[in-house]
Length: 366
Image (cartoon, helix red, strand yellow):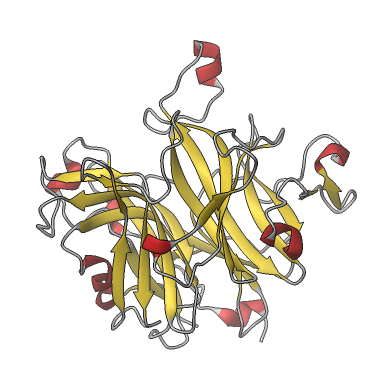
C-alpha cells in the first residue's frame, strides 16, 4: 500500500466521533483541558498529557466562576484502548492549602506547559515549555513569543522512571543539574512541544525556530542517549547537502521542515503503510485539520490535505488548535483517530460554553 492509498484525503473526509468524547467527561472535578498528547504505556493503558486544566473544587461536573480553578498541567490514564468504552482517571496534585496544583510544579519564575513524550526503555521522557508573564524591555518583549499575555522563554525535559505506576506515585527527575535553569539552543525556542517519536535507532523531535523563521526544525538523539537524559547530544537536520550536524557544526541554521508556525502537532509511522503521517491545524481562526505523508523524518513530504473543519473555530471568539493523531487508540476500525483543542477569546467564553475546552475526537477513514 502506498501513501495515496492510506487515507481518504478528499476534502473534509473526516467525521466527528461524539461517542468517544465522553472519555473526557467522566470526572466531576476535571472539567476541561488542552494539550492532549497521548501514548500507550502498558498493554491496554494510555497516558494523556494535558496542559492548562480546569478543576471544579466542588465536583459540579461543569465550570462555574468561583468554583473552577485552572492549573497548568494534569495527567489522564485511560484504561482500555477503545475510548468509547474505556475508563479514564485524571490526576493532579494538591498544594499545602488544599488547592489543586499542577503535576509538574512551577519553577519559581514561571510554570510548565507539557509537550509531547516518548516511552524509552520503560522510562517516560516528557518535554516541557517554560511559560511566564512577559518581562524585560519593549525590544526584548517584541522578540519574545507572546501568547495572550504569556511568554514562552525556554524548554525543559523530565524523565518518569516508573510510568506504569499511577501518576500520583510517579518518580519525576528533571534533566540537568538544576531544573530551574532553562535549556538553551541557539536555534530553537522550544524542543519537543510538537512532534516527538521514536523511529529506528533515533528519537526525533521538532523544534520551534527562533526569530523570523517561525517554522519547525528537526532534531534527533540516539535512543540510548535520550533514554539516559543526554539531551545536549543532539543533531540537527540541515538539508540534503549538509545532512545531520551537531549544534556546533551547523552551517548557518538547520533546515525548515514546515513553514506554517504551528507549535502543537504529531508525526507517527503508520503500521499499515509504513508511511509517516503528520497531523496539525493550519491556522488559529477558522482552522482546518490537515494531514500529509512522508517516508523519512527529514522529508520530502506531500502537500497538506484538508481532512476536517471544526465548527468551533467559526463561532464568536472561538478558535481551534493542537490537532493530534492517537494511533494507539482502537474502536474506530481502520480509521485514524485524531483530537483537536477548542477555546474562546471572550473573557467568559469558557464559562458560557461548557462544550468548549475539552479534547474533541475525529475519525479519518482509509
